[in-house]
Length: 469
Ligand SMILES: *[C@@H]1O[C@H](CO)[C@@H](O)[C@H](O)[C@H]1NC(C)=O
Image (tube, rainbow, N blue to C red):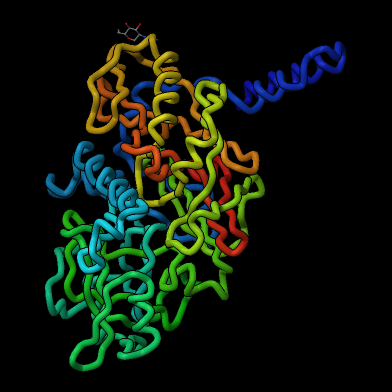
């Protein structure tokens, strides 16, 4: 940064005195650094937990915990609780596949409504603690911009609950808990939003959310007081009090926080106060904490907004429009129809960004051409472009930039380009979609270091670089 600023000053004085440098020269040097240079060891995951990032000073933000990182202490836990990189990538692929099938046009013809699976939870890597009930019991929830109903496991677990690290919420001990009766307008809304609805013999409204055949929650629809922060408390929040829950490898999570666009989402339920605006920052290094914030106050001044895509109106997804991708400081000038055919969603719980096949091959070709100084390594799961850095103390790699509609450039953080299985197998962290019309997914690996702002009232998504580290 200091170096490019120095170049800029140099060019300015140069231009002023001689006046022959083309305007674009300054722009390129300022805005499009060509490479990232990193110590090879800094690519490896850290084992120490650092102090809180910048955004955490504000009392109104909720810490985001990386359940796979050192701040959680998972590594000290039983070995089988730490998923391998291969397992993480497989869980992530399951999420991408489920988003693709959910959004594919012939999905409804292929599947009957009865056995309609939902969106896989994915890796469950990023979680936030939300207070439930008057006792303000803190429960760790996976935060998910592609699902809407917030649920947690509830006693007495009349069906079954999975093993959970947090204490299981007990509604009997909370006087602010109230279940929803049926039939009722609120209960009917469950089926309107595409979830399974039922009514118990005692006229209590029942919901069912299915993520995959092995991950689901069924229980009572109820209202409860929730505390996002000590000053942000909501009474009568509609949530799922799960009585029959399955979440393989979900021991760290007490449930899901639904940040999607649907009627039940926390964003919709708190819209009077926060006007459908929330933002989060996922740290670029695993040892730092990120934050989740609600409302449009205290947004970074450097934020740049791109319009939300109209193609996803009325769905639970936040769509946006990609217009191009840059590698090594050069725009690839990919045909816009490649992106408009697929459409693009941004997702908090997907890891790896999924590109349309034509865009992937262009990015890959350009990346490979700039990495010829490094020996290649075998493919890892669905990541096909890998390198062996065991003989190199520093790694110089090309920058990658996403270009969004509205002139928004998003240079991806240096830690968001390579997925490191081990130093001898570091892979380009982008995957190829199977079909041209599979939706492009901007995953959280590429969102690191940015405060990402979702503003559904004004139909826009914003990015502010360097908000947490
Ligand atoms: C990286 O290490 C390999 C193996 O020692 C070597 O062949 C290659 O030239 C090195 N690349 C750079 C850019 O230093």
